[in-house]
Length: 173
Figure (cartoon, rainbow, N blue to C red):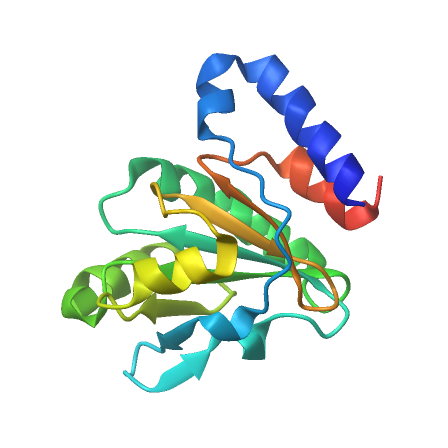
């Protein structure tokens, strides 16, 4: 599956040129989601591990309130989640702005009405948690983590992602 994921990503970067290649960061580190302690919008603590595994692929989208590509990706990400939820894949959104930006985050959630959960990072520990999980420094939003149905980190990618790629991974194609 990962071999196919890699070749699909490679074909996508060939199609979209060098800029897509620069945004691509695929990792093959197995990591557990529990590295991420997060917050719900009500400030309660949650664990990313509670949202991954269970026999479904999980796409985690890291976004920020000032990220234009994130806003452009959200309708496609929402459609992907709706089409796969409860069957073979799901999405979790994670805002990087921290609860200090709760009103801005909530405003964007209200604008898009996502059916997938959106959580918030602890801004003081996010970069350390990301590096511990992936072995890489966090670069930019949007960034995606992909967890396999067993809840193991299968890959990471910075920059926009295409629905075709997500479908090919989920279908095993």
